[in-house]
Length: 398
Image (cartoon, rainbow, N blue to C red; front, side):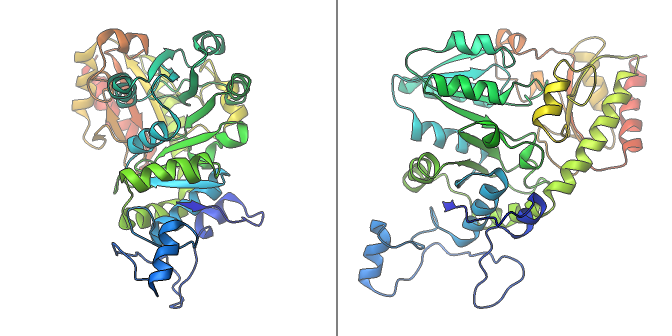
């Protein structure tokens, strides 16, 4: 766990390169990887002081590691948070948050339009321990308010959503959360702090799957929680210290290198995605395109208001059903058929049978995940090559 130091008014691009680094006596330019499980104390008294919390410093790499700490400080600076806790994965970031802040008898209101595995966590595992969840339409503020109960403690959402890029007004939902003494938790995986800063809009905590855009090249798995010094710096950190879903030093170092290019990568992803979305709208075999940068998107104005750009993820429906969608996927030769996203390489997946495949048909229908839906995380290849690859599949559909 690391608390964010003053950023001295630096811009996001500068923070992404410099924040959190504390050079050792070796004077290294690039951050080192501390591959050690434990640390040597100068005396028994110092060991006791470290373990009791009277003296700050490294204790054991399950919860204190210099390389992980640099990543935490840097991401906290980028999101504008006071504290950040790094975790082993994005899902462990969500779990650690729930373990830290909820108890048996509490209630969550969550968007229907969240990652399928998150739905499974809430309904299958948290439910076993007496935490109930009500799912609502992400963009419907009245539905959020109606679903809240006296024991509601947490509102959870992704915006834009996966895969339909639905959004909610974060500021309006933050006000609702404050009025009802709840916490607003926003998964900022699609936008990253390069395009959206939920804490500035009133959210209490931000969740990241660092596996995605923070890394940017599909190399490592990791997650993070960003927020204030009390809930994140003490409560969530306490879960990591005790339960151990820790980020490895090597993965933290990889994510640090990813953060250095985050801003320029997100601009490039957004540029390619907008060009592809506009092209898809013109294809006869495409029924509908979901991308916030399109004027046809029902929340285009909201996207312009709370994001600085529109991101690299879009989805579209082809004419037909699952067979036709699979034909498009199988005809590609350049795009990677994988459910991951945030990579420099463009990826394509069929959400109904992958990311949301474990949901019931009824739950998928409620979330708008149709059998003819495809999701593309647009990478940094030539946009003409991406279009040509998709055209192979479109030609098979007539």
